[in-house]
Length: 219
Length: 189
Image 1 (tube, chains in turn brown, green):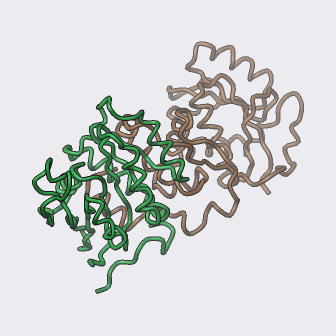
Image 2 (image 1 turned 60 degrees about the vertical axis):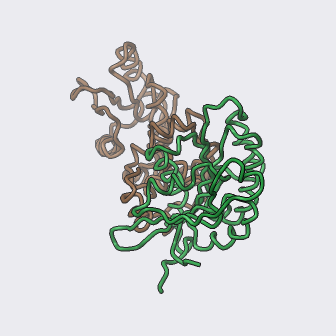
Image 3 (image 1 turned 180 degrees about the vertical axis):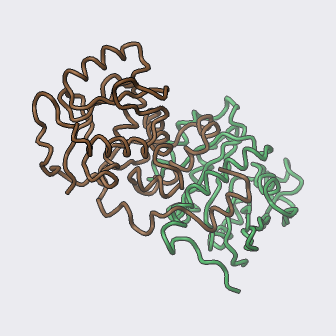
């Protein structure tokens, strides 16, 4: 069972908030930890958007209250804190969290988080998405990926990971599409049975449909 | 009956099934046409009474059929035959036509087995007409059948719009391709 770590999402924009909320639980397998997003101070890691006007205040607050501070920025350097460069990438985030975790810098200065306790509740693969309604024609025209994401969810809910593998899109892109579809009210989060993810049927759609898609020049 | 894998285009007479197939078929579609009967004969000199047939050849040589179903209700019996080995359905509805929701219900009833298996996309032609119901009414009609299908406003004369319909129907068939055995097998003969 992965050990629990908390990541405080501070002054981030709503879309990045959602992306990180989706990404973090997926990093368990790559980091050996359970990274849980939180809004509470005293987290093991705090993510601060340095590009926003309130970046300096959020940074100072995180330094006071959280174990390790990561600056999210479009620049290559975040000064004296760890840097996570925009655009958000799951691989980069996982690498950074592994580095931080390995350095032992994750203990919050105030209250300990009980970081060696196992995660309570269901496994993370039980969180998924279901289709609520198809987007409008204009939206589908403008965002061809939306059609494929909705098509993947039309018969049953799937996890982010499963949708990503089904479509052959990277997790970041898939998380972005799902977050935007969620914002449009087309998909919503739902619990799915854990065995649902990672079954043989979740592999990328190859073969006939890919050939047909290629032949018709769609997607 | 041809046993190759196929996509179906259905809808009322004159909605544009033949046009849609012609826009994406590799070959000039074969249309079996006969004189219309009844009231339709007054407005249309010929009508598709058997079926339209086009095809798309894939790079590996497999041929996917594109079938337009008969427009007139007296040939509805052919719908059942055509559904065999179908991978998806495009339902074209003329939004400007009185009773367009009734038209939709007719195809949801007639192709229920296929829709439950593969899904379908609803293409609304003449969608800018103010004569038709609100777009939401089509979604509600579909929901009453327990389906969740995309409703796409389109100009069926535009290849780009036909491709969008195909993109939608392929997106619904794709998960079936993932779930092994859920799609009809390739014809061995």
